[in-house]
Amino acid sequence: MSGILHRLHLSYSQKLFLLATLPLVLAAVAISVLVAVQSRALAEREIRSLEKQLIDAKKEELRNYVTQARNGFYFIYGSAAPDDQASKDQVMQILSAMIYGDEGFFFVYDYDGNTLVSPRQTDRINQNWSGLTDSEGTPITDALIRIARQGAGYHEYLWPKPSTGKEARMITYVTSFPSWQWAVGTGVFIDDVLASVAAARAEVQLRVRRTFLYIGAITLAALLLVFLSGLLLNIRERRLADAKLKDLTQRVFDAQEDERGRVARELHDGISQILVGVKYALDITRRRLAAGDARAPEALENGIDNLSGAIQEV
View 1: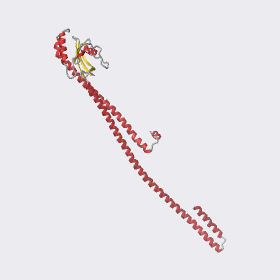
View 2: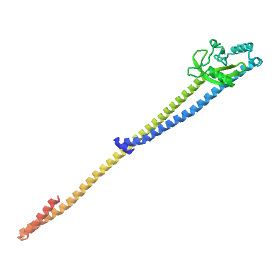
View 3: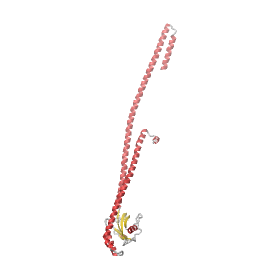
View 4: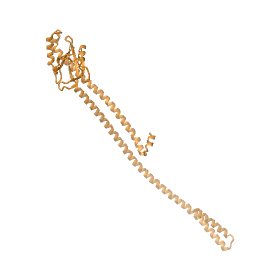
């Protein structure tokens, strides 16, 4: 990390800010990803549970419809022979009248795939629909007949809604009249369930996006706080540094003045002593000259030497 910062040619304050904010940003990103993954996983489990509950409720409703319908005309079917056409016509008439809601109806296929009852789509009656599939390739007629032959069960596929003619997902419960070789059932469209599930997933996505926004806002606020704290600290440190620099400069000036004074005093004291010696040598020379003393040149030589020393000292 230090090598990377060095190659970026950042200032000390920029490096400090980067070192303070980078772990915060990484932590915020990690928390965001973790929260998003866990939120989606938890929400998906809840959505699947909700979808299963709604589908199970639909299936139970369909089973009740078929059971009630069967109980309603079982007294006819139970006493009829396999070739009793009159009883068959009577049961088909009852089933054709058993429509409910906006889309609900009962249907009947014989084991050969011929439609015997289809009250909301009468154009399908007396036609063979073996091999019929929906737009996704899911078998319909053959699968319903196979389930009826096995006893009873559910089947899910796309089917045109009678009200709109457009395909919608449908769950069907089908049972068998084995002596007549009929597959009798009813279905319910689950587009409302799928819409509820899609709305729940959209709500989850919205909550996840809000969570990202909240975490981003908190991270941004933290970054601003770090930046402002660093800025205030930098200003404070600059002020302290300026005050220390001013104090140090003043101390340097004082030390220079003290040094100048010391040097001046030493120079003054040394030169004064030398000059006093020169004056003393000149006085001795003057007196010796006046007295005709032969040592006058010696005293003058001492004075000259002392004067040379004063010059060198200066």
